[in-house]
Length: 180
Image (cartoon, rainbow, N blue to C red; front, side, top):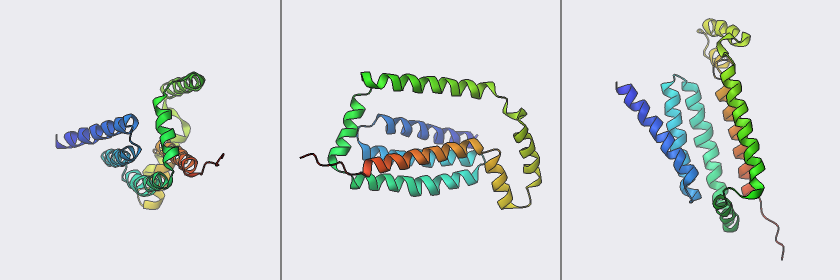
């Protein structure tokens, strides 16, 4: 009973802080709420018995990516940050409609593909289940088998998010040429 309450508290904090990150007009507050979101998701990973993924989330995202985002915001000029806020206000303009349609179509295809596949029947998952059963003696081997087996999708999604964060931070931190 207590575990369920704590789980739902972590889930509510993750959802509410994530909504605040998206809806907030203040970028610095969004970054700090992103910190809360990442910590609550790490708590959810602990409840899913994925301690290594939770620890990796805290070390890489909270310790690395978030600090990098804060530095980017501190080192960026006010004009570039104001441009981001102005872009946020123009949420759906005519030139963004094709990108929105493509994104929604890819999301529908992805959801359809995930719902169509029976993950328990894939050969590489069946073979990894045998390896997981054998890997109880070595922690390093167990972590490797679990990351490349059971936690492969979250691991890849985290790496894509990290790449997008690095590209976004580099884009925000670059200096705009002066056209005087």
